[in-house]
Length: 214
Image 1: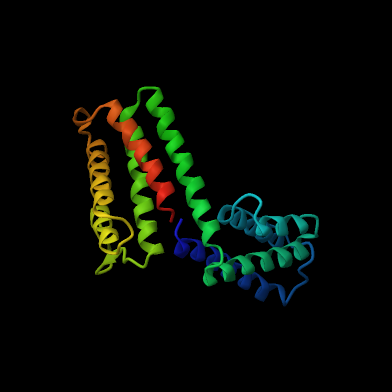
Image 2: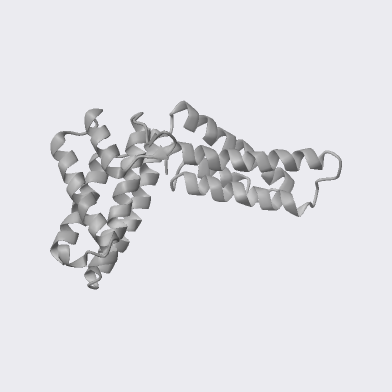
């Protein structure tokens, strides 16, 4: 998940909370179920956007026994702290861990499918993880991901990352070959590759994600 996506989730939720607080000024907020719902949504968002053991999750635990209105206020402070740290770039390592955990889950799914003989969905899942990661690398390194309002193709972003010096020409060629395999799987050209190639694809992408975190 790119920083922009994380910020959008936080800002959308902050907007809903702001509207709730405006409405609550004219009525007694105690016991209002909406406060509990919003507090729960903050917990879900902060948990989703941080990693196990992070200070943000630990802070959430401290307010878990508060009444709903107080818990909302407490959780709101936690989320605003997370937002400000994201803006300041202080959570880069955390963001990279979130990416790594997410992609690892997908790759494990692909490996499980491959072990059962389902090479084609395994190739598609691995390829999707690769494309999402390439886009995230562009965002991290200031490489544009769209032209004239339209998203760039994965192959274009791959070439742009090489031009930007994020990785060298050899890595660019590897990514290009992986994307070609993924496209064949996605378009039903199943006879163009075999199980061993998909295994090498998945292993290669896993190494790539670790070597170039986003």
